[in-house]
Length: 88
Image (cartoon, rainbow, N blue to C red; front, side):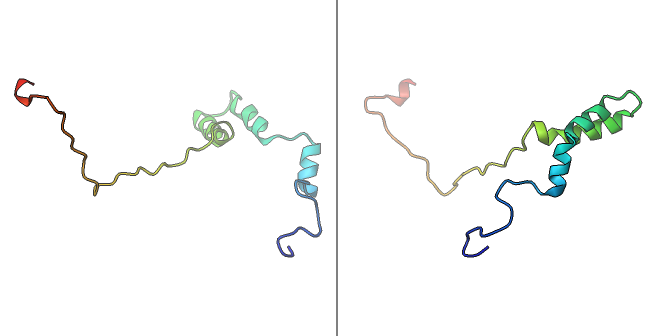
């Protein structure tokens, strides 16, 4: 690309030739895997493998969260006037 500007070729979002051919066939790999998983003649291990392969299409992977624990910070101490600690 010249200076970060698209100057030629396909427009953004235009599928290439092979992708266009697959779209024209109405082929959906997820649907095909679901059909395989529903067959009666496959083992439970095969069905589990297929379902594991389909999970990312239905449930996005969660990202790790950084916990911000700072041990260097002193806890804040405060006093309440009029509180008698002997009566507590």
